[in-house]
Figure (spheres, one colour):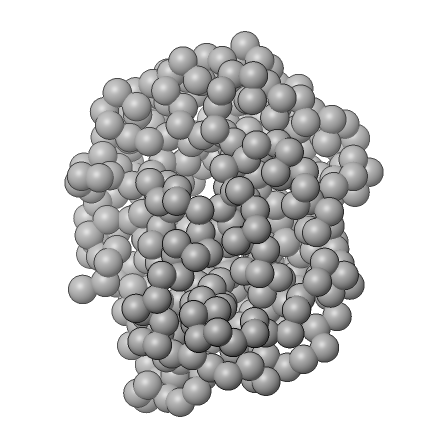
Length: 401
């Protein structure tokens, strides 16, 4: 049984698709006005009760959108979730709607963390990506309000062709903001995002190795979404450090800014999951904030569940394969028993290089990227540059459940 067979690590609720921004990469293809079919306040509370029913401890809960602040009941929902024992975070859009008064109400309701998107170091580049002038200014104001209110802050950054070169310049800003976590979201071509917006496999590897090199030197955690290969990269770095070996050829800020990956990933000696399992990779690489961090890769449907604005249950927002709807189906049962979720948690079902990879149990690749590229959520992840050392067993079927 996989570690996340009974309960996800995190549950995301897309509270609304309404948003004032028109971001280039928007997964949700956000709309100006709220959908009348959105879950009601009562249905939202019932959803939170089912999240709590996963057990002790329950999954972390994130209210996302669109812009959750477009719901007038959002503070009430945060308070209810907190009252029934959930740890609730929220991701507002960078608009004038996120006032100090509203953020203060969320804090008083028990909000555990505010996650704010900063995609570039300069206002010009950020606003171009978000396609609304003033978004960067509003985002900085939200960050200032959060700090004044004592709300723990997470910075989210979309990693794609338009933003990857901004990452080195963002490091100092993320630290200055006092963030506890920097979450790097690797673009998946869904919604408004196109495949040519994303990075190639070796470019992704360059960013991951740069982030792993950076992590011990910064006071905030670094995590990735839709690039679970980061767990492999962290393990390899810990192994090399423990063995007294020089880390892999350095990935300087310049190499990320220009994404000039000069060496093939195969030139570094491979290290198996077993060879790093006894090392203190976590204490070496990650700050001690384990209460809000997953101990292993959380991927679509495997430690992760997503409920959209009208109640559809999916493995993630980036893998929009409907497995049920909370208006008719029980969330806990769908996560634990639906064939789609069971397949996504079974590494023996993976195809391509992911199915042959010795890291498949701890990484498994991005199922959303595999689906976007091939229509098969169990196919190999085209965003991975790693070449498996040897086949662990015959690859699983590529056929979708």
